[in-house]
Image 1 (tube, rainbow, N blue to C red):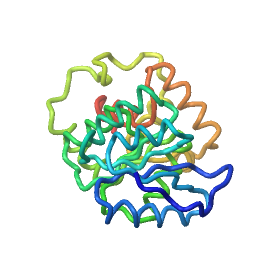
Image 2 (image 1 turned 90 degrees about the vertical axis):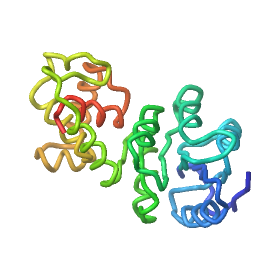
Image 3 (image 1 turned 45 degrees about the vertical axis):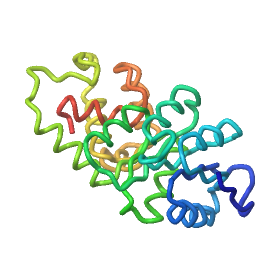
Image 4 (image 1 turned 135 degrees about the vertical axis):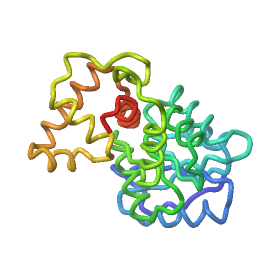
Length: 230
């Protein structure tokens, strides 16, 4: 596991681990992210084992995770982190945008999924969103998920990912919010779309999550797609 400089260290900054088995990708990426005033790259890991070691040494807020790594791949590492360190958010950054990779990573608990076509601003935005408990899926990934969902035969009644119908007590506004989450909108984007405050959006999301047992924003995207709302 390679170390990082102490540039930009300090309280209030998101502490990030960059994981990629290729040093030619890992080290420049860590250096670029470290230039952001609100991000501190605390470790650069070459495999899943090094990621787990870095998180155990902590503190860590976000792991920027490659999927194809030796020793332990990104999906298994994400699953381990979700189970053992649920406070640590995972954002996948990979060249792979196939169904198996996307669904595997999101199912393991990743809060974000970007392809390596993403620019520096896209990556830093996703890290900040994950650190704030939100999720970001890039457009290619969203399109892939939507295409996959629409290619499957529609069930007679909308069901969530656990195979249960959405609760009857969801309000029209809560369904609307779930639809917009499924379309990849942030809380601010939802607020602007519905002409309500972000605080009101958060209230609707909290109520929605409680009624449907949705765990996080990535889970909400899956539910919206599975129920045909997105």
